[in-house]
Length: 77
Picture 1 (cartoon, rainbow, N blue to C red):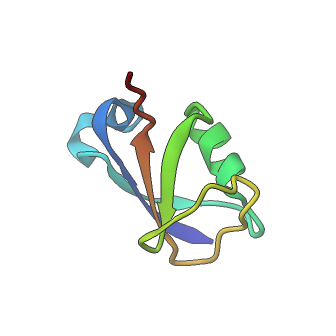
Picture 2: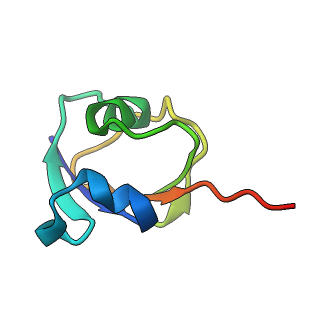
Picture 3: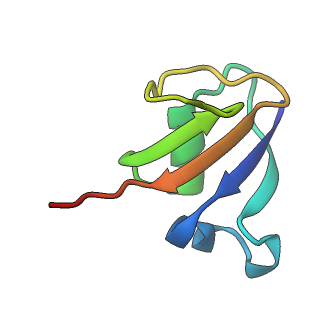
């Protein structure tokens, strides 16, 4: 199954520079957001949207053609 991925901020560094933070990835059927983060070596403390909807559940199963955006978690004080 293929999904469309866009990474923001320093997370873009896990992809080649020429990708400009975007890629189409092949994942196994039934893959979850947690599987995606593990495959990319990304931390679990990130903000994710799937098809333009905020998704806090890393156990969410992805579907072919999903658009996943991953942002760095920001803290402040």
